[in-house]
Length: 118
Length: 110
Image 1: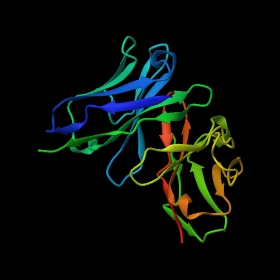
Image 2 (image 1 turned 60 degrees about the vertical axis):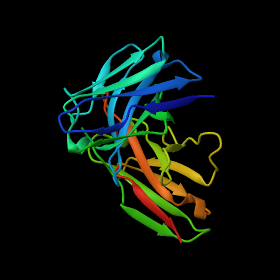
Image 3 (image 1 turned 90 degrees about the horizontal axis):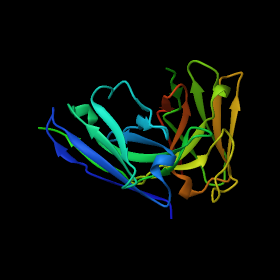
Image 4 (image 1 turned 45 degrees about the vertical axis):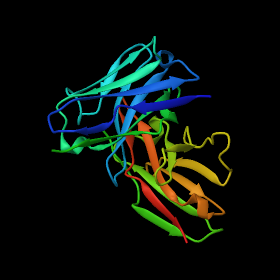
């Protein structure tokens, strides 16, 4: 079964750091485009970052320079390193597989909650 | 970068048909595929339409998608509404390594 399971969310103070993980099963992370999408409380979906199968990475302007997407091929796991966190980064973070032929998300994880607050 | 604009909410009665629009602010709606996602409260999004008008397996044919170049918009139409269709719906497209979601439309089936 194709599945994504996120972990690593929690409560962090402004300016702090957190690393999210997304463990994949049923497919190979490194052979796919993989993305992070977030949803602030009561708000809509916001694309955060993508890593292509070739390794190129891209970020939304709102997180550029603060967040880093990466993957561990041996663990078949996607990561999001979040530094210099702000209150506005508070959200549920989803990882998702991106279908390269149409640039849409076809598999989503259950999400992990990040709360940035003092 | 472009934006996708959706109505904040729509409502309709069971058995009726509803259409949700998604207007692209700049660039052609036809230049990149549009997807539609359904998100029920407390759940992750799921795809109901991909590649403008394709349904994933398991999505009923009551769901259909289209694009209109004259209005530079995409539409999601749900016919024969059921109470289980009540959810938030998001359109999504892409351009130059940037993914864009619409603001979402809350569908109420009453």
